[in-house]
Image (tube, rainbow, N blue to C red; front, side, top):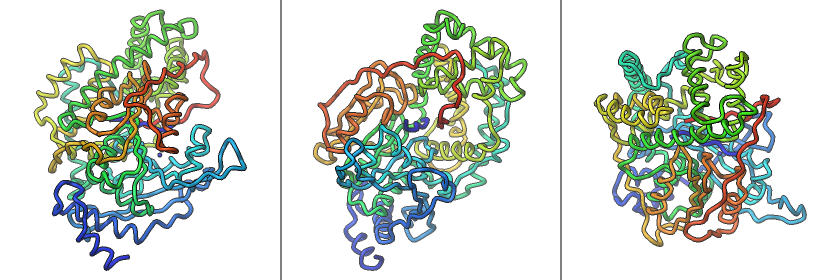
Length: 536
């Protein structure tokens, strides 16, 4: 899955926690269950000391930073400990529509942006945006970097300078030689993860991420958790709701990963590749409707031919010596996530084919200063997904399934394979995916947000999660495909989000919102580039 960013007393106390540990995993004697209770009790006693953020001194909004300590291995809570970086802005308690009215504080709202591998540390500054001011008035906004990410016991599997090699090739229907090259790269990356992380690698997985979330809840002084998860963050939230239903206050699942254990993660990625083809078609049709602006053809098929022409030219001669077919593909993959990127990408393609490569180079180049963060994100993504579940270990299975899929969904299929292929050669034990689900009355009502044409997390995942979590309510943005809806351009969706988080009000079992407006075309690039989107 790929991440969405928003528009993230010792002594007797520990003894009592051990003796009264809740049956959070259906196994009251499970070492991890007891270890979580021990870690949460410690965290509650210690709290979090928030102070200045070392790397965010110039950011507005009064964001403060701290750490929470969690066990590397919850079966051994007294063993090695790691620290997770946490950020916070305090609830303003100011009504943005009435300066004289004081808003009651409702506690902490914790955010996870997905990935796995994305950081939510900068989430609290969204409280400065108009769409978030009402929530920021009522809640402390809490972001954090999950284990492995950034300063939270960071993982790395490869020298970042090698990871960011460019230009690179990309083949829609790869040759045998190209496949062999990518297999060798996948094996090397998996080997690098094992060699660099050693025995710690096995502890980076979704179940431990959910346990970490409960320790964070306790450290914040919250009896029950209010949580917003996007993309992979919805799977994390679903695991938490299953393991700790009595610890949930309110929970929002935004752009939902299919939690069916049979789909985690190999089949989920096949479904994702198929869904990206539909969203890629949406983008090409939008370009075609604005042929007068971009001159890329009056039909989706003609736009595809222009894209293929750019791909061929870049194969022969990378733009600016930096952008080859691989970078072109990475840049245009953003179109499947965020339609607000469509004008920028269409302009870049149009300008390149008319002889001006600069906009494309600006959009698609890899920048060395971002290499370490990008490699860290990739390492955590793979560690979590590879550890979470069994994957096919026979290349012939991958080749068969994706050759078949690429006949009808060529845009993303093989690039998705190369992203995930290290899981075929992963070293270490695999988790058995938890069978997510709650019985009626076990979990407070929860809110699910989903767009019908979301490519990164296909809509069927939202339907499956609603089926599994009793009392959950689904809000659907009809005929739209943006990934990550909370705080975005759809006022209807945001209205349901606010009603739930501020007042606990939910619509019927299934509410629908009309799609947000499509972006307006631009004949030139904007004066200032849009906010960077992390894609994993």
